[in-house]
Image (cartoon, rainbow, N blue to C red):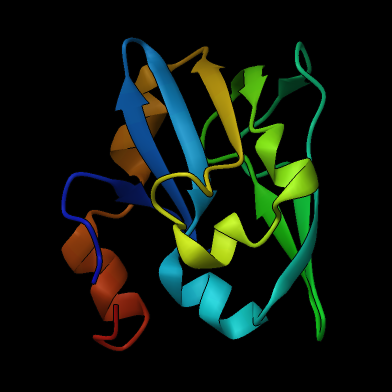
Length: 127
């Protein structure tokens, strides 16, 4: 299922607006493609990033997935729980498996992302 309250990138990240910040993770589709996640390389808090910049990596037993910034801004929080429990990305990609929080410098960039219907069309209707 693709949550309707999130925005999505063509690179399979999701973005949730929360009090002027944006929480980011990878979609259910992305975690299924990767398989069992064994390691997540988190970005540094305080790092300034540009939209589309490589920010984190998600490693599974069969592949390495790249996580890009959906908007430009500053990394203000990372999900340290993933250091000991990277499998949360598989178990709860839209909840406990989030990867980082960014404070956007231009919130209008969120409007450029896909809505749930657009993302569903991108992945061929699967959730």
